[in-house]
Length: 279
Ligand SMILES: C[S@@+](CC[C@H](N)C(=O)[O-])C[C@H]1O[C@@H](n2cnc3c(N)ncnc32)[C@H](O)[C@@H]1O
Image (tube, rainbow, N blue to C red; front, top):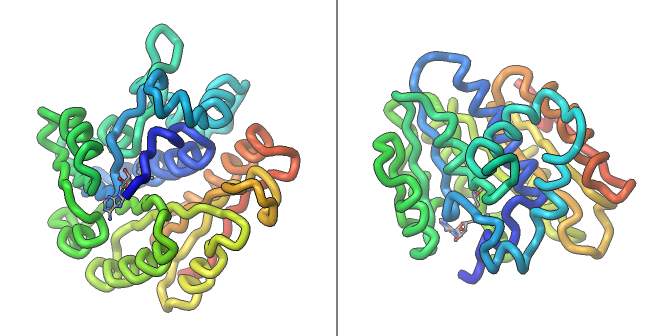
């Protein structure tokens, strides 16, 4: 396991993922009853911009920084941008970029809970330290796929599962799909959001086709392409596949991904929000 998210934190793919996270969690919180946020691949929770890996990767420079600097972002980005500033800016200057657990922490209400799983010991240590003293949040140093099987359905009966693996393993899409279907059998009413990379020949289409024919209902795909999907560059785009998305999430996110594609793309960028399977 060599993956270190610090090389990539704050890139366009993180922006997409975290916009979807904030909008989804926010909409679930429209109801008063408490919920569980389960982050299967949580990372270290915060990424200081002056960290050597952050500086070397530098992907935040073409991700969150131009998004923060752009004029008049659409409404669906405002809460996300507010949380990025709240967690990481000092005197108006971004010093660190928040990971998914820190974003969720900033949103959780008093009776909500979060379970954050991270397999890499150093990342888990850093996350534990960051979350120390917050009794709503449990950090588990364990395999997130296995934890998902053990932790759902939650006592709250409501909540969001974020699955954000590193895709270093060529079989990651298969493991993801299998785990997702098993979790859905245990907890069919949970909301699931899974991140996936879009590279030339990388398997994203196969994953979506598999999920489309899986028998699961209420599937939504949200994608941000920065360039053409067949470009050999590397990460051409990123997507989120949601199961049981909250009401009207698709409408809110459509405008957001179009704007992000125009702001960050190379001219061939595009946003896509598609209901893969309906009710
Ligand atoms: C893409 S990063 C997570 C970023 C985080 N979700 C965020 O948005 O800030 C993936 C993380 O998963 C961890 N990881 C890899 N395999 C894992 C597994 N089987 N279970 C839990 N964590 C894992 C890696 O160490 C890495 O920190």
